Image 1 (cartoon, rainbow, N blue to C red):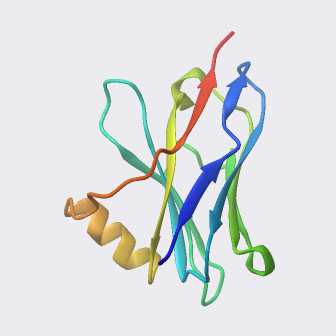
Image 2: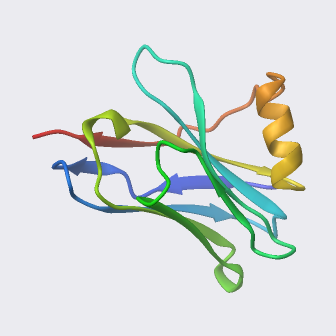
Length: 124
């Protein structure tokens, strides 16, 4: 059974950096990152495909966050730079066959099973 484990969260000051990891028990076609701030609705952050390595990011994180993949380790990373207080949230990774289908499932509210996530706190 496919397992995804998020890690790498922590407390950082504004302008700092963190790298989140999403470790999979097996090969996954695409991995998307989502986040949910306290009292806020969950939102999509980034996604990386497996076929061509294409990446997608929300406008709010473009230029600051970079998603990458190490297939040998079955791990996807989310490098977060220039962190802002509004980036504070619990971050989750979700697997799908493609980023397109993952985006569709998210928009339609079909993503109901989530892991524990990893907490990122950006505060001065």
